[in-house]
Image 1 (cartoon, one colour):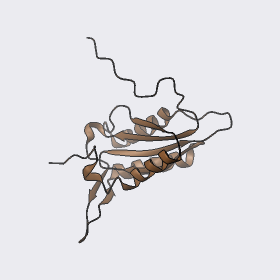
Image 2 (cartoon, helix red, strand yellow):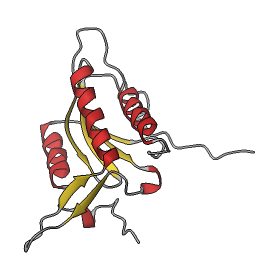
Image 3 (spheres, rainbow, N blue to C red):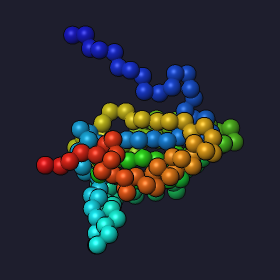
Image 4 (cartoon, one colour):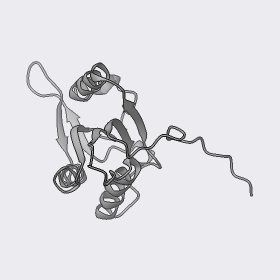
Length: 160
């Protein structure tokens, strides 16, 4: 049987272990709402994001990466119902080389999938190489306001 050739998801010939900042989006398998619940409260409801147990485990894993991976920092993130956004920063490591971005994300996905016990994530992930301070600030704000704009988000799905 001949399968269609998958479109490459990484930038061709780019070294993803180079120091820099990367905006990463990872979606759950079939975009299932497994990671958090977003609800409004009170008279003037501002959406509130409450993590599920698996969402809490993902947050612990992000914190683990921040504290245990030399030269790697997840400086900003949000855990949404069916996806997560991260700003991953690879620092200059004094010649030792950073782990490639795909290895860091692969380990996060593998560990949390094993904790969950079922397929948790869709294959691969989306990345964007952050090019300058303006790009960084725009992405930071996008992550900050993602919960508020959930119902207009491209990943939003109505659960029946």
